[in-house]
Image (cartoon, rainbow, N blue to C red):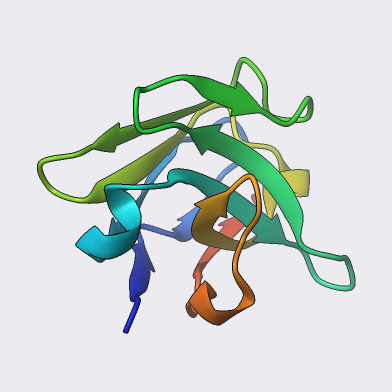
Length: 116
């Protein structure tokens, strides 16, 4: 069974930083590009960032220049470094395969709250 476990969320002031982690089972991680997604209250889940197995990255326009996605293939872990956080970044953050997330892979996510 595929497992994706997100961690690293929390409460941070505007302008602050957080680093999210996603530990993935090897069966997914060695094959697929991995992505970060988020869902804010009352909104649909949206794409945030993607990193391929080779390390190429892409970002949503709203986070470009502030967020950095990376992966450690030896640890089957993907990261999301979030800097200069804004209140509108408040959401539950999830990882999943990219560019097409699999519905069976959604985990519990990790809550990020940006507030003063």
